[in-house]
Amino acid sequence: MFEACKFVLKENFNNLFRIYSIAKYQVLADMRDSKLGLFWNFANPVIQCLTYWFVFGLVFDRRDVDGITYIWWMLGGMVCWFFISPCITDGCNAVFKRINIITKMKFPVSVLPATVIFSKLFDHFCLMIILTVLFAFGGYYPSWHWLGLVYYCFCAIVFTISLSMTTSVLNMLARDTRKLVLACMRLLLYMTPILWDIKRLPHVLQRIMLTNPVYYIVEGYRDCFFYHKGFMYYKYSMVTFWVITFVLFVFGSTMMYKFKAKFVDFI
Amino acid sequence: MDSNIAIEARHASKIYELKGKEKKDEGVKFYALKDLNFKVEKGEVVGILGTNGSGKSTMSIILAGICDPDEGEMIVNGSQALIAINTGLNQQLTGMENIELKGALLGLSKRRIDKIKQGVIDFAEIGDFLYQPVKKYSSGMKSRLGFSINLCLDPEIMIVDEALSVGDKGFAAKCLKKMKELRDEGKTIIFISHNLKQVRDFCDTAMWIEGGILREYGDIDEVCDRYAEYVDYYNGLSGKEKKKERDRKFAKRIIKNSKRSFFDKLFAAIKTR
Image 1 (tube, rainbow over the protein chains, first blue to last red):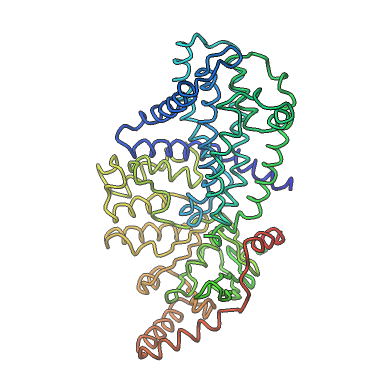
Image 2 (spheres, rainbow over the protein chains, first blue to last red):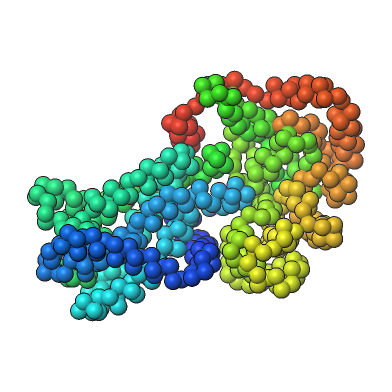
């Protein structure tokens, strides 16, 4: 088991340039696909944000959360969801999408989840730029608290890579995995307190919700933007987050290691 | 293991599963390769012959380390590379970008890619198309580009699977010339082709695989002669006899077995290590 983790970590760190190149050209190729290219990296999240804001902010007329206008509060969590969500759905497909490569050349398969996540990271940066501008309108200016975002972004990367490690291998065994993941994404969005405030739940459910790893990252992002309570305030969530991530990583890399020379048989 | 040996197969077999005609039918296991035993010396140039579906490509992916044999073992001593022409080329990117991408996919460092870039461009001879997206390329141009990148790699063992059958004669001749240079440098080359003339011209020894079984392995001319004889004999048969021959070969390769579910596959794979 530890041999597997060591193997996967080694393979990933030895192939950093490979990961970087694949991610870079993936982003480039996606941009070339459409006429407007880079524009869509910005426009897509903006349109989605407007939709949620229209439904929840205007139609349902949500009250302020913790003294923060609903739209800003929602955006603070949504920005992180817009990164995690495509990472999970595309990460699931990471190995399957590259099937023509892994069946035709000797290739370190375990780097594939990382390549997907790093190509999504580019979109995330684009969105962060828009968000900084938008927040300036709302009166939230960048401060040294925002440095915490680096840590939470790192958390999101590690978590999604660990998860994709597992799902992408399972997806090779049975393509149903991706269908299941896609179906569960909407569920995960509404189950995680991104669009609604956790304090609306009864106390017991709140405790359970704190174990949701996605919530830890979302709340972390919001902490950096608005609350400024620091890392230690979330220590309960932090411990469960890292435990879950570690378990996923160990499980995922064990699967990767077992199946690394068998993917050809599963097509 | 003897350091002069580049590749050694010990009772290596590869098994595929075939689905039944109907879903409820029992699946059968099928030997893509059955009990291979051979040794290839370093610096040897081996041609692999065989009719369609006899397991040549399976052999090439096992040799390239893409998958493991299900039974027995295949020991490869040294770095190996399978010449895969069109894989890893992205339609949207330009030729130049594709050189960088494919180089990275093959695991080259940035410095190495910069170094081979000019060589690839010169070899591919695609001119100004270098800065066009690959989707605008003709199929010949794509193969030229893909093949050139592969040839600029420097593996100890090279596996070439039907790579020369694309592109025009001029380019094929150029590739062959380049491969001869590599051969003279003492590289081990596994050359899979249907073109008997090329194989005779290029290889030292030949391996004839028929129906997943190693029929002959030895001196190039002898094996080629007998293979040609067999092909002539097979082509001379009437339609009915041909079918009989195929069925006979097929029957030798299958093993009856019940179909395995998803979880069986999972546990079997975990148990094997």
